[in-house]
Structures are given as C-alpha cells and as structure tokens.
Image (cartoon, rainbow, N blue to C red; front, top):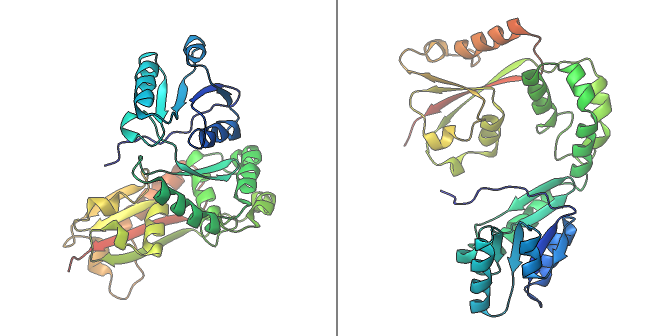
Length: 291
C-alpha cells in the first residue's frame, strides 16, 4: 500500500523556501522556478510570511535535520534532499506536456527508477498532448451543448479519446480534429460487449487489451468470483454485476451467440429512458478460471 497521496500544488506567484547551495539545491530551485514559484532563501522570513513549502538541501545531514524540525514546527511542509525519512513530501520525476503533467514517484525509494519510467513515457506521448488538452478545455461550451448530460459527455469523450478514436490521446494530430469531431452528427457505435477469461489473479498478467477494456467499461459483469485486484482496474463509476455461473442468463445461453449481459443492457435502457444516450456503452463479461 502506498503511503503518499499524489497532489498537484499550485505555487505560481508564491514563495517557496530553498535552503542550501550547490548541486543538491540547484535542481530544487529550478523546479520551483519552472512551476512559476519564487525562490526564497531566508528561513525566518519564510516563517514570518507564512510560506507553505520548504526544500532543505544543506550538505551537512545534522543541519538538514535541525532545519526540518524547526520548519515543521512552524507549520511548513518540508522536503529534505536524499533523506526521505525527514520528508513531508517528495518530488516526482515530471513529464511536462503543458498543461498535462505526468508525475512518476516512488515515495523516495528510487529517484533513478522514477526518472527512467518517465523517460520511457516521454517516447510514447506526443508533444501535442498539451495542445489536445487546451483544445478540449476551449471546447467545453460546445461539449456541454452536444452532450448536456454529464454521463453522456463522459461516454462521448471516452469513445473519442480511446485508442483508434476520433481524438485518440496518443495521436499527434488529434488536437486539430476537436472542432470537426464536436461539429459531427454521429453519436458513436452503440453498445458493445467484450468477453474474456482470466487464469491469474495478478492484474499485471492482464493483456493490454484486457486492461484497456476494464478501464473503459461502463459495466463489468463477473461470472463467478473475480479477484478484487482485477476488479480494482475497472472504473470507479462502472456498474458492477456479480452473477452465479449456474444461473447467469449469459452463461446459460451463450453457445455460439454473441456475448451479451441482459442486466447491463437493462441498466443502459433505463438510463436512455431518462435522457438521450451518447457514445459507446461498453460491457466487459469477465470469467475467472484459475489454473
């Protein structure tokens, strides 16, 4: 279980205390400046002015510990370079696709590992990812007009942003298609159901397709017991359906028919009766058969 809560702290125009000089302190100063903050060097001034964040990067370990204790008693959140036991927060390795920020952290266990994970992601994610975020932000009034219902809006965006969608998040040209997609009259592909059988309770053994389907599904139907770690990969707001394999209508009538979940279809029909549907309704039928 992780012991850190990932947060993005807004510091533009605000002072941040950085104590120390040399190769350990300079990266922290650059980090503050890059985020729009103002580097402050005087501890007492920082306390008097109510500064909230502090980096301690003295060469002497005892001086770092003393400063951390004093600052924490004064109400500041403290990061002590290379001493995770003295830290209230740690700094992740950051992939910047402004305004998209991806932070990779290890809770202070290994900054080198976080860096190399980030470098792999750098190669995968297009430079235009930030432009897509900005285009979607600018399109919010149009999105609300096309999809007045919040659930329909989410489904419409899910369909557009998924792999192969009109606004595929990893397609370098997607930001140029936002207006055309928004002006279109098509309403998606309707309902879709995928079915797969798992033999491992380890979510790391999921294929890319299975992990993506669970993350995008509007409903997950587990026929028989399903491992909690696998079900945790589903969206928090996805409908969860647990069926007894002996009594599941799908399991009984499956044969050569296309997979379907009558309960999920009923839920979707009820939603449509309350308002206009939009986008793809995806159901995952999951069987767990351990080896």
